Amino acid sequence: MFALMTNKEIYRHYLVQLQPIYSANEAMVITDWVFEKVAGVHRSELIKNPEHRLPSKITVQLDSCLADLLQHKPVQYVVGEAWFYKMKLTVNEQVLIPRPETEELVQLVIDYCENEKKLPSKSGDKISILDIGTGSGCIAIAVKKNLPTSMVHAIDVSKGALLVAKENALLQKAEIHFIEIDFLNESNWNQFPKVDIIISNPPYIPLNEKEKLDKNVTQFEPHQALFVKDSAPFIFYAKIAIFGKTHLVNNGTIFVEIHEEYAKETAAIFENDYLIETKKDIFGKQRMLIITKKTTDS
Image (tube, rainbow, N blue to C red):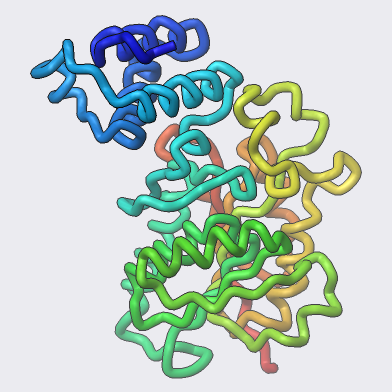
């Protein structure tokens, strides 16, 4: 389709086709991203050489990418990458696309650890961190790169997700200890030592809310990482609360991302054994909990 078209004509065609789905600004950002990734052409080059024609191999790829985008496939999956905490990560449909609010969760952890640097780690020589449900590895890798002396473990039930996470860790030169495990099965927990910090952005969207989400989420992102049964919407938080009682050091801390509409219900799960602080994201939504284990004699 694009073989006889100039760069400028292809670019304009992208914008026209995408604007019924996205805002004008989003369509431009997506088009720029695809052009840079697939054709190696920055918008400044389009302005300088609007009549230039790309090789047929590239135009075929651009045509294929547009077809995917028109089916609501997220641009991150189309180009195979996403940005998170100033890192370019590999993503595919085995993992969730990292979100900006998750960057805020990472920042909370980094700020906390930097404030605690003057104190020795409560679990050993290094601060030990466990990322539950690592997906693309974005949280674990960002934490490790910014807290290089920490020891970071990351777990996931999905073999496909862990392959992506390991690739990202390698690309980012971050030493992460990845483990494939079903965290909901408590019999698997005995292999873990005590840790100073637990981080998790677990599945927390009830299935009955599926229809409220955009097609690019429900049709392409992994449901296993998004949804929980309506009958057990807080299952991961309940398991983390139990896990933390035996695997978190005294005064150890849990950082979790939560459903904005169920902050109180999620916090209530931890209230007996932990001190809880609710944090809002940059949009003023209650999206994170900082949960500190109460001191015990054990």
